[in-house]
Length: 158
Image 1 (cartoon, helix red, strand yellow):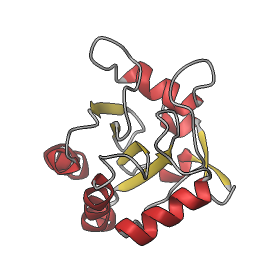
Image 2 (cartoon, one colour):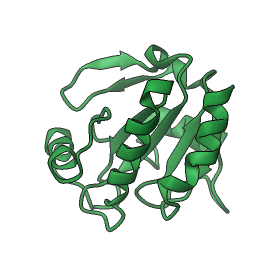
Image 3 (cartoon, rainbow, N blue to C red):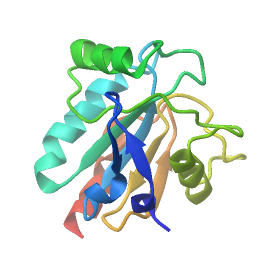
Image 4 (cartoon, rainbow, N blue to C red):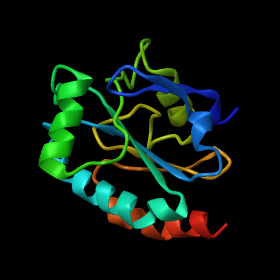
């Protein structure tokens, strides 16, 4: 099983297969527009614009699990675009932890455990996926997206 076995739903309600991104490294990140870490949107967008021609995909999944997101996926995506210039795909709001956790995030947590627990502890937990759909690494919420550059460049060179 890989991330390519999952579907995702864009903020506009369109569902698609992550298999569409086969042979592309990905960053999958849970987001929240009202979080103190929201300026990471700018850094994620910078990574996306710098490396998208080489195949990198960034996928944002808003979540209100920590009570720091707007009421709808459409509002969240619009806030990301107008405030931070986000052009990478944004998705429907998802649950990250617990019985209602989105299956993709359950898979990500299982394949890139956190420190002491697999639970996602906060907004902007970032997962790096290789071209084969394998989860390579989990980055903590406080870790700047810029600290992912070496790992991204290694994946793009493969």
